[in-house]
Length: 148
Image (cartoon, rainbow, N blue to C red; front, side, top):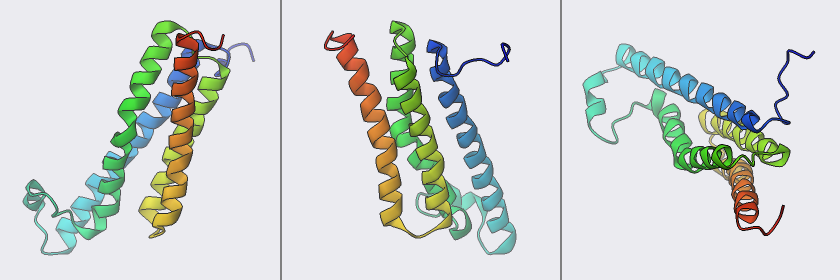
């Protein structure tokens, strides 16, 4: 058991949620590519049409949109992780919240690519928003000396 890293008791444990999100991004890039190729084989869609905005084929549209959505908050997450590592304050609470953030991103992908339930997708997004906001709040509170 000593060889298994403790994901929560080590400041570098904050990197594991980043790795998990990178895996999600790789999966989404793959799915978009597969679906676009399927569209090109099954219809009069030509792959060159992707050069023009808004011409995403129906079969890949949800996947491409979800991939775009992943980057809307990813920058805020990655900047925060870098700052937590630089200052050395990534603790159990921040790491736990980072896992909630990433779990929410996975759940958001499932809802967006498999259902038409936009209301549920909005609720799932709130998991991400809340977790990311709390990590930022903890980071700022600690940085300004409001908490120790």
